[in-house]
Image (cartoon, rainbow, N blue to C red):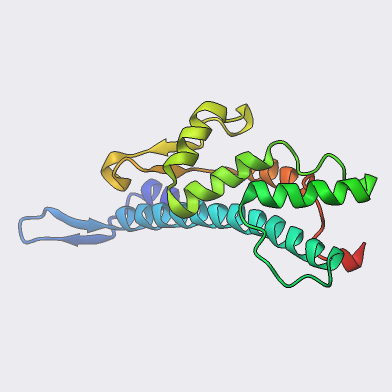
Length: 176
């Protein structure tokens, strides 16, 4: 809004050199502010994906240790091992059947690209990206050396949060 107001105002705010050439102008500063805020918003959206996926992982651990209180704390491992732990819950409790959601593996791969720029995840998603997330994975050789980056909008986050919500269990099994 401030940029539009400045550009429509017709009054120069900035600095010129001794020859009258513009060194900087307020609209350039405002454009840089907008770009910086857009980058920050993108990073915030990426962090939401990481946090949502981590929430799911932590939930599985909490449920596992509540269901198996006599076992020593253990690392359940990667996505596949966590998924097997959930399937075991589903055998005990019908309300936990059909979890995690089939698209959780997609969210796992998104997280791996965001956190590690994983080539394996890039390969998987390039073949299995759902239409809801089409166009989110991009490679820019000039910025990231060709490593994949994830670009998310609000509707992508809603889809990801929906997948997490359908992937149970809730974080604290004592609150059920």
